[in-house]
Image (tube, rainbow, N blue to C red):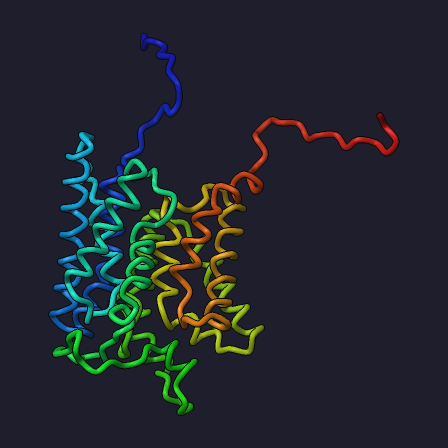
Length: 321
């Protein structure tokens, strides 16, 4: 007869580990990474390699300095480096890219306790720091298939900046160019098709829930139409797809509850389109997600499911003491 074993939950151990989940995210990002190398050339591979190496080395050295167990093998630092690289222009100086990796891992992640303890997305926060520290370098875009582009090359406009600031109408890329990524921009934001393939892979693998990406994209589309913009253009242009599928869905910095995820995603979408329409910068995905990361605990405090078996509170009658 089998012994009755009494233990606390969880009673079943799932097969998914942090390493397995991060490996799936890396696989999901591969279409965008490969597309960036095809579109922008070997220098894109250099930026990706530098960011990943910087994040891995920063994690190893910081864990060693803090005398904590090594977490390099869980691959979360590789994901952070890859996401950071995909949020940078191909013309970025490798030293600046490496500095971004140090900010993402040491300042945003490890100083708050490591994986699962950071309250904002490390890659996006590092991008914002670089954007404010090196604005000229971070907005120096190369044209698609200009494999000889460097930091000193002639810059081009991104679709959103072109739509908002270029004087000649009709100069913005068409939908097919936005879908395939044949235009200027950050490494991972140009090819919307590659990002969609990677995002669908994560959904099929149950790594992420479609709630946040779908709600985020739908909110942007609705408010884009209300403001008289082109909803499809807003969905395909800029870093919206990359942010919706790969950064707004971050386990650590996004809500756990279904209703809270809806509120979080609507907030991201609303702030994104407000920044695009009224802000001085054409793109607002990074700032929107990070700001919503900060108020995620507040959202979960007020938008949470009722505990199973808990009776509803009775309303006090008027005039009752």
